[in-house]
Amino acid sequence: MSFAPPTIVPSESLAQEAAKWMARSLQDALATRPRASLALSGGGTPGPAYRALADLKLPWERVDVFFVDERFVPPDHADSNYRLVEDTLLKPLRLPSSQVFRMEGEREDRDAAARDYEAKLPPVLDVVLLGIGPDGHTASLFPGHPALEEQQRRVLSVVGPKPPPWRMTLTLPVLLSARAVLNLVAGAGKADAVRRALAGDLSLPAARVTNTQWMLDPAAAGR
Ligand SMILES: O=C1O[C@H](COP(=O)(O)O)[C@@H](O)[C@H](O)[C@H]1O
Image 1 (cartoon, protein in one colour):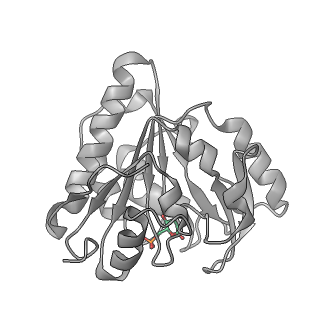
Image 2 (cartoon, protein in one colour):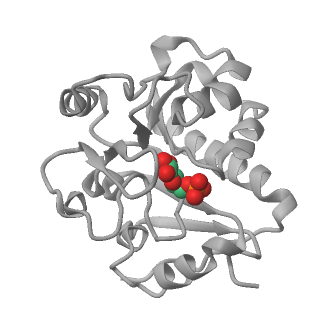
């Protein structure tokens, strides 16, 4: 199984193009269903795309926001993926909390928190935004981690090599069943991981999400 050719976008328009991709995918989902689900990643890359998405006109009252992964920190912590999404998308849109399904990173019982999130997830996610780390991790699925082989659980708590180590993450079956998935990547530091993932190196978790489209800036594309 190989990926569709990546879309390479000038760095200055990457956020805008990613926002347009998310908006189009949500519109596609809403064309046939009353509500659409949008699952978002954290990290250093997607914030500008979320800000750009907040400016786009959509029937936001029909969109529910979920999370791809979360760090076990309180929701107002600088490392919280929720905080990133709150600052860049939820607050600008004034999205009511009834439409936001947060992974509870402040919980002490991490496995219970992951199980509780499974109960909140819809059977199939409509739109998923992923990222990739320089080591090839995506969501909080890290190279060589047993969570990569999970087939039953839809959400797991894991310990990863990247700080903060305790994480909650969607598993591969959830990502692979999603209707539209984009991996958004910027920067030369990701170029090697991108090249290996696109070549099908399955030791990289990102390469296992075979239903993803890729949107890269020229540096991430290696040129
Ligand atoms: O730790 C994480 O890393 C990936 C990639 O993030 P980046 O900072 O390298 O852009 C991200 O997709 C994930 O949500 C995050 O928790």
